[in-house]
Image 1 (cartoon, helix red, strand yellow):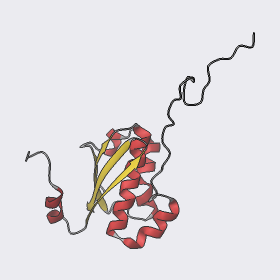
Image 2: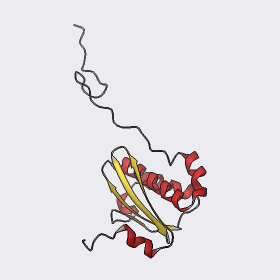
Image 3: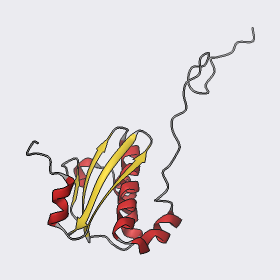
Image 4: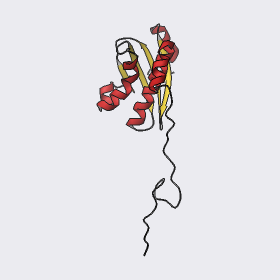
Length: 143
């Protein structure tokens, strides 16, 4: 076992309140851990400002915490793979919402009504033969 990775079991000894959850959006998959702390963010080993420079993506990610009034109560450690920036921010939001429900089941109705517990099933449509893209047809010339 390498010294770089900390196994999940060891984290449970560090904090009494710890929750781990996975989230997904488009091609992105996120594994997030929430533990009681001061509101520190670590995404793939980088602070949130470095990983999501756009304020829009940072807002998307912190929505579950804002809705449940738990901002600054938990430290968030996340590993995100695949997809683009929008997919990754959506995957992290999904994982955080699931982890919050694990920590406090009373938050479930608020997160469910906001739609954060539902995996967004929209995926990229496949390209069909005879077409340029999924639905774009080649230019048609009448004469």
